[in-house]
Amino acid sequence: MRIDVITIFPGYLAPLREALLGRAIAAGLVDLDVHDLRDWTHDVHQAVDDAPYGGGPGMVMRPQVWGEALDAVLARDARTPRIVVPTPAGRPFTQATAQEWAGAERLLFACGRYEGIDQRVVDDARGRGLPVDEVSIGDYVLVGGEAAVLVMVEAVVRLLPGVLGNPASAEQDSFSDGLLEGPAYTRPETWRGLAVPEVLRSGNHAAIARWRRDRALERTAQRRPDLLAALPERALDKADRAF
Ligand SMILES: N#Cc1c(N)n[nH]c1-c1ccc2c(Cl)cn(Cc3cccnc3)c2c1
Image (cartoon, rainbow, N blue to C red; front, side, top):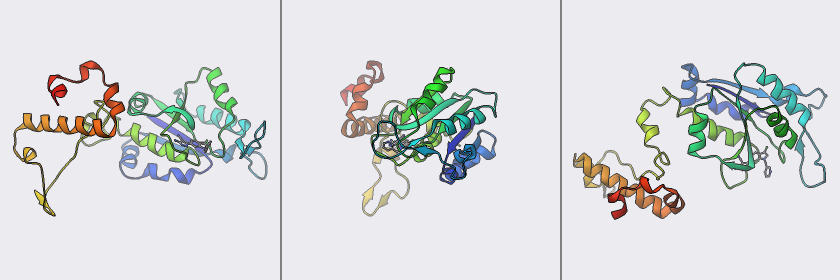
């Protein structure tokens, strides 16, 4: 997978070259290029923003600069990317989104700042038949798109074959079966007077699986009843319903 990121703060994306993601890049599983939007300005001030039409607070990012940047970055690889534009007004980014994007050959993230990117940049890209996803990572307000891109790239890249040491981890993710993960434990057996649940030390794999499923159902019901309500009928078996 090729990932391109366009931003006015390239340094903000440095963590993408650390740890798991860094190893994926080193292993050739991911090609990452981070581009400075100001490389496509032509004035001495390298202006990337201007006042909003219709008035209002803040500034809006100029379409000319973004148009040139996107055209140039698109042309650097024959593969057509999904263009991802983080925005507070976007569709929710979920595990399902990450799984969908993990199948893409190429992702191009357009990181904006200020009050956002002139809407005509997205409209022009869509008008040329390019797939554009305007997404939000959650119901809170950030200062720009870079933090969102760090989150989304990690969520996607960890799903790529060969990235996680143990592929089962991704299969047993929270959300992968529609439920939150239950509690996890490791040695010692007792710590500060708190013991590991006995069933986990029983060696009875059926009982352990049942206990873990019950804890996942319990936690999901307590913390994310919306996820439970969204589960398809077939997702809960008779034992689940008895829980
Ligand atoms: N994804 C996501 C996401 C999220 N979950 N919160 N905030 C953002 C986000 C993403 C992109 C931008 C761009 Cl471009 C500018 N801003 C600042 C801003 C703040 C309030 C209203 N308008 C713009 C962004 C905030």
